[in-house]
Image (cartoon, rainbow, N blue to C red; front, side, top):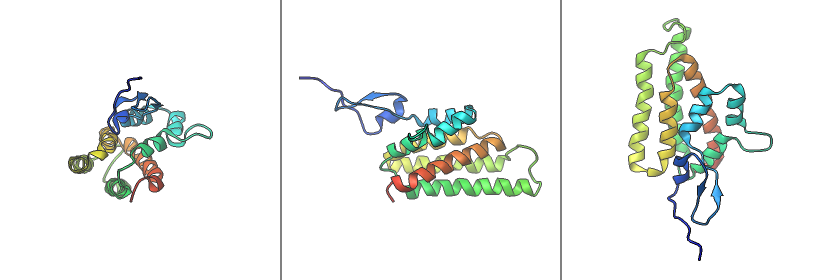
Length: 169
């Protein structure tokens, strides 16, 4: 009899590679930290691959969203709403001339960091959101400049778009 190993739900999300599952099949996994890091460090072709995928294939982000499975769309949308309010405040203040160049004021960064604490609180109540927490923590940690904030908004918005039909309400 062939001995197979047991894996926990979502274990593949944390390994960043292929994992042998209890039924013996390989599944591609998506490490949320790597996904965000690749998006921020890559050029336009890398961003396109992460957001749109290759010809006739799902994007890496869409595959990651599918692995979020039991996370509710409402939670994802709530975090995105918080993020978008902060982003809009930054843009408004920039348009009014209160912010110069590509800087992000400390009070806006603190508000972004608070999203991390909200996600951590929810994770303590619902373990299934751990991959989403890793994604958001990495995303927010990458934000140093206004350009980073713009990139984060695009990636987060794409995640919400893919999540709409795939996650439970």
